[in-house]
Amino acid sequence: MKPAYRCFCFAVPSKLFRKLAEKSGEEGRKRIDSHIEHSMRLRTHRHVCAKQAVVPRTVQSPQGFMPAQAYRRSIFNAGFDTDLPGKPVRHEGDKPVKDRAVNQVYDNTGIALDFFHQVFGRDSLDDRSMRVESAVHFGKDFANAMWTGEQMVYGDGDENVGGFTEALDIITHELSHGVIQHMIPGGLGVVKLARKDREFEEQTHVLQGQAGALNESFSDVMGSMVKQWHLGQTAAQANWLLGENMLAPQHGKAIRSLKDPGNRKLTWYDDDQFKTMEQYVDGADVHDSSGIPNHAFYLAARKIGGFSWEKAGPIWYEAFPKLKPKASFLDAARATSRVASARFGSKSKEYMAVASAWQAVKVLP
Image (cartoon, rainbow, N blue to C red; front, side, top):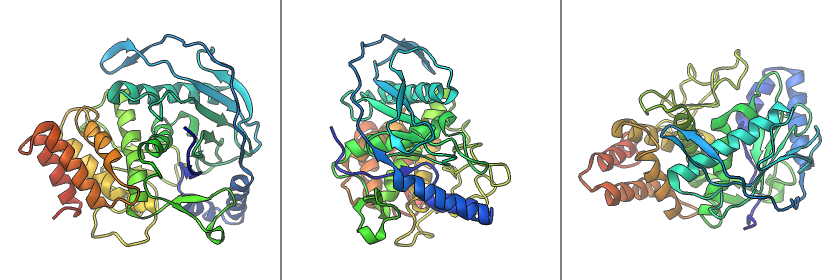
């Protein structure tokens, strides 16, 4: 299924990237220009891969060893250029190569796909066995990673931010944009941009409003859960940080926190993510607004207890496809509450946890 839009979803939000770059003075301004230039020059040419044999695999999850779904991963080397997909370097079932970034992307993409398959029964991003293509070494010192609406793209980073290919939660976050792209026809919060409002020519669509924040939140929730799942952590044991150790030490510790959105001691020096609707303003950046539904999920998972992916995760995963492209936080609160009630009962601990979480962030009265 070919996506109906090209919504570039960057791992490092533009606001954060600009703040870090501006702090570096003239060099930082040059870095901003370089980042935009790389984005402007991005051109995706679909690569037709030879049919690959299905490779039986066995993986280890927190539940033990079990058969895994056969996937179709293809990794390309952009060679520090901006033409995609680049040179094919590793396909499904191939042995590891000398390039560490290639192997990291191959392995972490597999973990994310294992999570979706084993926890939710999902067959790749589109639930129809789609090939997952990724390009590494995109651009020169490109300090970002992104889902383009068709594939993953990874830069090598710079002195401010990096480690994109080894960050399992960030990789899952970006891949989850692909998941929800196929869950909700037209895309959740996806808005077509007028040419005058584009940051670069290829950016035809963008995430906006509460629906766009819900899109970002869905990806944060999935990214956080897959990290917990891979480490075998309970909701109580997890630190709920996203993009941990990707920033240079002088900038902070992580990109976002679901446990305490906007806590700069946990994240980065100018983090102003919202935690409740009391902070919300119309037209806010979707990464700021996403803190509200993020925190609701955290509160629900903590109150339910145990592993976040066992009850809270399935509630969110089942509820989000019921949302419309312009859904509000209230729509999400109602949808997750209805699913919790249908799954566990209207007087259950699970339902009460979900409802009270949305009340705590001031979405429900």
